[in-house]
Image 1 (tube, helix red, strand yellow):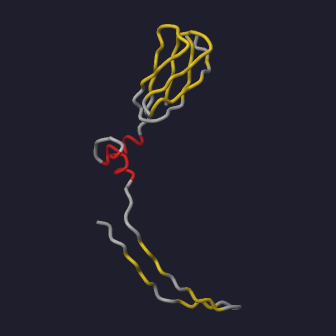
Image 2 (spheres, rainbow, N blue to C red):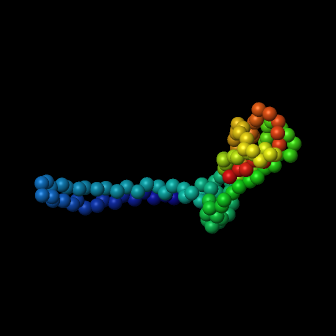
Image 3 (spheres, rainbow, N blue to C red):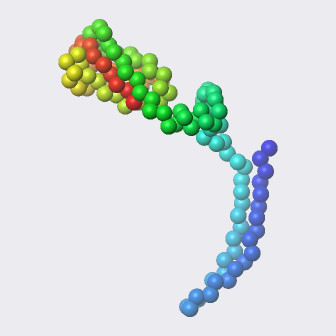
Length: 122
């Protein structure tokens, strides 16, 4: 159960060469909120705090290969984030498409023509 704490600090007078100021301060501490680790667990993740830190520091990347030429690529990457996407065709030229994020673990890329290649997600 969260506990509210109120602290009353003493009054202080601050004298300067030109003026005298009185400082009265009250500090109120409210209920404790969730930690980032607790929020991570609420999102369905499991593990210790060390696992949480490792997940934050991980350089999670995913390479998708589209073997059959297509104008729409649907990629399930399971990175649990909305990654940046770089696409290359089979001739290793960078290609641009419209990226639609379906969820934190899936996206679809649409192109104006069919082709095969790779998508690098990070």
